[in-house]
Image (tube, rainbow, N blue to C red; front, top):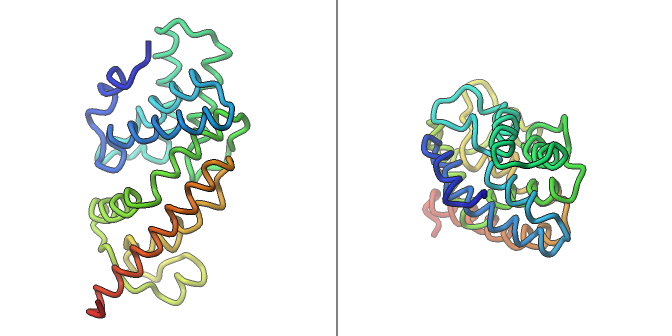
Length: 211
């Protein structure tokens, strides 16, 4: 039987942004969304527990394909658990479809939409603010830098321009709400995005010595 405790062993060697605490948050949010949106809870739970199980180790060069590697890993685990092929494929689709920057396999089922939304909600709100700053630190970039006019217009940095946490907010985080699939998640995202907006307003004001 798949449980949070069993999943812990799959997330021992992960970066701080995709660690086991991220799995716990996504798992709990996915359960909430599944209940309200009418998704199959068993498929959602399995996908939430396994969605980042491969390719998220610190320094890994497989981050861009972690959703594909995790889907393959999920098949191995679920076969050991006695799942049938149809339900394994349903979980694999949830996992392959959850990556924000890969739209080759968009979520087609309500379960996949729930997993996508639960994972993306974790980049918003208070947790999202912390994750953005930690991710910048891991990448060796500042938490705040003034974005160039080119970046503001195109989302592409000038040569030598660092992609700060504020850049990530402008480029991705403030737009996540528009990409969500379920009504429940969009309502939650709206509140979390407002918090994130205020966070970066305060951050910039403090950086400039205005508050």
